[in-house]
Image: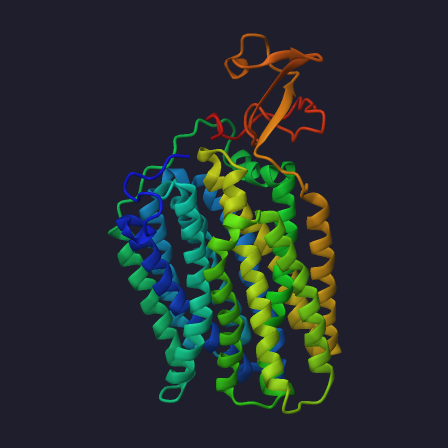
Length: 476
């Protein structure tokens, strides 16, 4: 792909004014979100005491329900609303909900507000993710942007808990929600002053349902995207134990003060941040598949260690061991999640990027919808060690499924046969007759001419009776 004219290849992506504003908007919103994460954990502990993991698990499950259901629906109608208006409106919605959270007195009120907050996030995030490849079309620039985005998430996990711990020494935790609202308001201001590119035009058939279903069908039809979904499940298994059960491990099992929860979450963020910094260089020397599968394979090992840690009584070694385990889970998660955007982009036509990112957002959070309740509901019933072991088993099965689904040899260009296109069709300009169809090769993605992934011999099954609802543009 050609380099962006505004950001020459090899120079800092932050020299692109549009990306710089969007990245800054992401950072300030994430800082606010990080403050809310700590405050929500302490609010749950105040409302439910030892039942806090169950409250958090349910709240996070509500969050995932919003992500899974709202993101595809918003994508189906997003082309009718200017992207800048959509993102700014969702930021304002999230700010309003954050200001309402300190006022709750019942657990059900937490769940309602969390759904509204995360429904707005489900509209914002895919729109943001699909904008970045258009702002930075060069592959190296986009890889740097992915690493910076991952680093922003990681620094939020590292900096926000530290900031929260400092603030908690002078204010009560409910004041942290005001910081969340401030982050979202700043994000809205930055987005509204950004000059966003126009999305690639796409002529489509079918209604909103067909457009929504296309992204999910894209994942089902592309082997490496099926593997990516399995890897997302492995990450969700490790992350759910950290995000849901840290408060129980730190406050209950290790009997440490509230500020230690922030330190433990900070260790998780530190491991992820250091990995994100190293990934651009690593990905120049190794393929995405190798990096992502090896990282995912580490997750069940670390979760097994966490099961052992929580099965034994606390000792002098317990706290440093916990911090090391949380840092390792963060590092492995980052090594899986950061290259994921490259895998989606590689597997999708330009005009279908919004649908693809929305599908990935929805499907990956469906994985968290499974693991969050598992982490929250198991812990108070069967104990932390059994919970860690169960999530480790999920991570192991998901990693094995990903390794089986993702071919070791996975080139972009694939030779394939078209049995369903007539002679003289424009797509067959470079094709030759072969076995009841026409054979040629190019960068292969699922699109209007390619409804199924080719087998080893390049043949594809016909797909009668199902209308095409994807892009009519050619793949890159």
